[in-house]
Image (cartoon, rainbow, N blue to C red):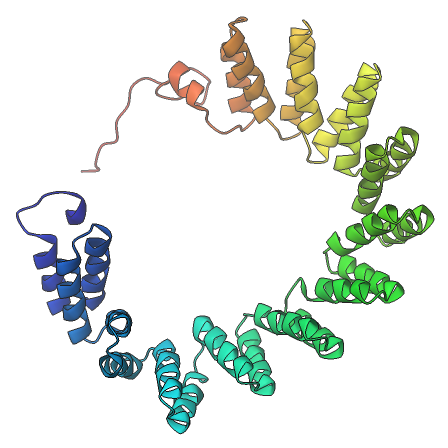
Length: 404
């Protein structure tokens, strides 16, 4: 607050006062703010004060500054003090300096100490160092340590490195380890790897396994892959297998491909199959197709079903179409159906559209949206600046009073 306004007590003086009472991070934060504001001299003074008090971040910043000026010994002192203050990343920086000056045994000692950390950024740096020096086994063990701490993508990153080197067996093993550690993309990486090696049968089996774990993207991509290769029968067989396993969204993907290719009858057939198990996306698309074909009542029925299944998109579209087409009562009824299905925002959208076109009173629409549990809209604050009472009457002006 003081940094944003002029006060009798300066920010710098206040920060030093806080640091004297043990809040050293305030000095470091104030140094950052001053540096961002262009006051480099004050920033450096505050940074030195924070470093003197043992703030690791300040020590590292000063170390980087010394490096930039070519003062390697000074940089090493700052990094060493930061490491002594408990910053594991400073150990990596020290190791880098020692390696560059030929002190390999000291560098190794620093890296071994750093490897005991739980800090993900430090583990990333350690993995990079070990990989660069060809110590892939140590790098993989560090990634496993990171995975146990919840950072499983480091294993997958190493898997990609092995894949780029042509070591596909090691790559797949690392991807699988990442998956076992909780990485939702681990098995998907194996699918891509197998497709790249033209092991399509293996890729399909794994894609189905991914779908069982909740990730249907790999199997959708495989369906697209076979479609692009004009192997339509294989694409449909794979989609059917996924559907039989309970993943109806794959049918929507296949229908979309047919639609893009201009194969409307085939698209409708697949959409209908998915709609039969109440897939909301399929219901939305069928509603749009029926509306375009002039089957308005069928379109409305499907749009209502989609809204009830959680997708109000088609119903919202139909409300706009009926309103613009001169059927305001139909638009209102459809918007009410949306609200009854848990989407009062459609009533708000209709009210906003009428406000823009100045086509009559909208207060009753906002009230119905509020009654249906809709979020309070800015327009409602204009109509009812103090809100509504439980009986629906506009509230009178009110204030909060402290209890006696």
